[in-house]
Amino acid sequence: HFFRNDDRVHVPVDEAPWRYMGQLLIDGGGTCSATLIAPDVIATAAHCISQDGGFDAHATFVSASGEHRARVTAYLVDPAYSLERFGRFEINGLDWALLRLDQPLGETLGYATPRRVGGRPLPIDLMQAGYAWDTGAVLTGHVSCRMLEVRLDNTFAHACDTTRGDSGSGFIVRNGETFDLVGIDSAFHPNVTGPDSYVAVSAGSFAPLAADFIAGRTGMPVGRLRPPKPR
Image 1 (tube, rainbow, N blue to C red):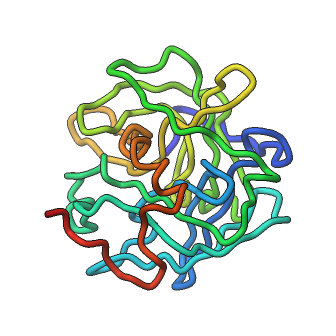
Image 2: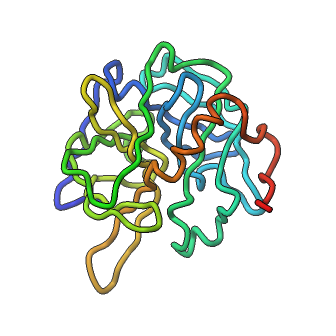
């Protein structure tokens, strides 16, 4: 799904922020993209680990350079997430997942900090990169694209060139000498009456929950299909 031209390029995988990113290889088949947000935590899309009746987070994260890899040991998703409702475009703002790794890859590679987006589009360029279906295991990105609209359901529309396989990829902005993660690539919404919509989950959906998961106080071990429903 491109805006006029395909503006994706191969990004330098040994440089920040691209080295924070990697490919999520699902044991049961399929791949997604993901971004380090702590030494041993990555952020991706919930639909990447969703299956009928629950979640399967048995997966391996491979760094953008291909030199580092780690297994997923635990996950955190919103208990209200439903693959069926996601398929009907009802709950895009819940399409996030945090995954804990068995290796602190971020100590070597670095990581981005989750950042809330306010009520208006950020007036600065976004950087996005992922593992699209047509580039295989090569990280490609749109290094200068824009946020178009911030929505009340914790999503935003963007004008970054993304396609299948980019699901879960991060939207990054520079913050001085560091980088922040402001969103996760989620879905493409066709629109027969107007422009198509390219949707990302705002990091505000999970930023308040990230600290407890990073500290190991929350999360479900891999193998448990579904988190308990909130009371």
